[in-house]
Length: 109
Image (cartoon, rainbow, N blue to C red; front, side):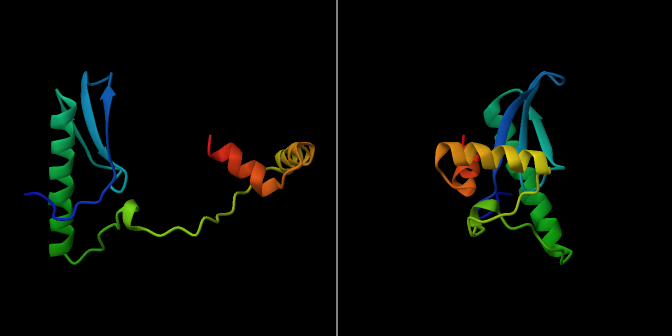
């Protein structure tokens, strides 16, 4: 069964240990699907997710919201050791930018 309006985040990568492609879903990190081809791995993980979502709904469990459907404010707090904070503040001052701008630039690379 296919999941209608499937907005979940999928990735297919090679598993050297298994010698196959592995399909993954970010919203369901415990699930995976092994297959000979990337296409089959994607198809497999999408079916597994659809089956799990259907099972969760039938058991009245909360189904994870797709990452793509979430809204983000653009703000989050990061805790770093004081010496890292000092180093970044110095780098920002030397570059003539705010600490926020420096951190944003470093994170977006």
